Amino acid sequence: MTNFLLIVIRMASVPAILLSVLFFVLILIDVTGNMLVCLIVYRRKQMRRPMNYLLVNLAVADILIGVFMLPRHVFHHTFEHPTGTSGNYLCKFITGGVFIWLSAASSGILLIAIATARYFAVVHPLKRRLRLKNKHVLWIMVISWVFACLLTVPSMSAIVYSPSKDFCIEEWAEWYPKRGHVAFVFAVNCLVPIISMTLLYSRIIHKLWNNHEQVTNLVQYARLKARKRVTFMLIVITLVHTLCWSPNYVLYLLIFCVPGFYYGSTAYIITVLLVLLNAAADPLLYMWFMEGFNRAIRSVLCCCHGNRVVGVPTVRKISKTPVELGFSTTVDPN
Image (cartoon, rainbow, N blue to C red; front, side):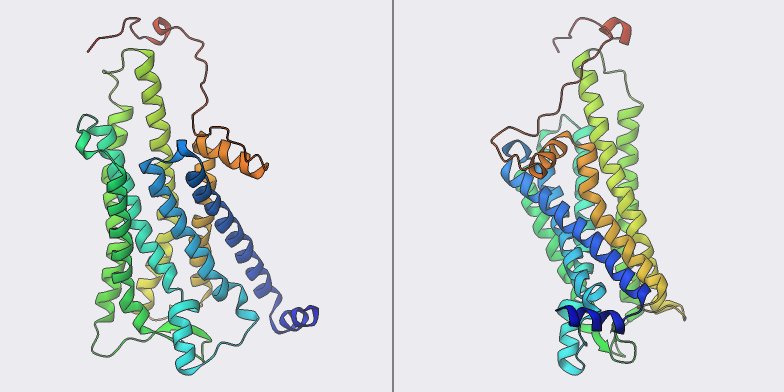
């Protein structure tokens, strides 16, 4: 085993090895953190809520991203990629990154669904039939993954291994409008989610931060504060996703539309690192903003696997009186 590692190190350059180590560290954080998220929601009854189920789906997509980056960006120094038909099939299912794109498409749908659920919960709280329920989550899961598969199938069929570039590339048939397909993927996976979530969260922000006439007592104040915190977390997650994925989508568009851009370039590696950084950051953001995830993850990491209830937010003491906060001390019965 030691001799094998020494041979691998001699064959690969020092920057390439360091880059692989960086990928491996981020993948480890990604897979471990998102598996903890799934485990926590599965084991803690208090965490089994519709919104958390959507976050679990995001975690599954992030895990797939990390797993399928391993052969392409970590272990590629340790084996010689086969050529011919076997090499092409290996690209389509393992080393070509197809399942990374599939996870990205599913994540976009899930983030739009989360923003939409938050919109109805905040802007139209009295319309109970529009609230997110478990049956809605099931349909969202099915639609997001089926849509992602349909969107990814054409790219999977076009991916082949290029021995000259030692990389998996897309070779489209002459009759297929590849630029139209790439533009469609860019619009659906990048532009549509950005525009949709910008409009939805803009309306939510206006409702929460600029509409205080209905806040008349401490209970409503606490509820408003909790809604702001959850909304802020979801906005941060969406913003990080957009900033990390947009460069990769833009580069994908440029590869087929502008000469000089290609798979495997330094710019391409940087965009892939950003994608992996987003997958690794998501569970850290849950832990930072959500008290339930925070306490549960610390409990798991400390090997405290008791039956203690986790998921109930810590009660913060308010030192000021209702009058000092500007609220009425009487509760409106309506």
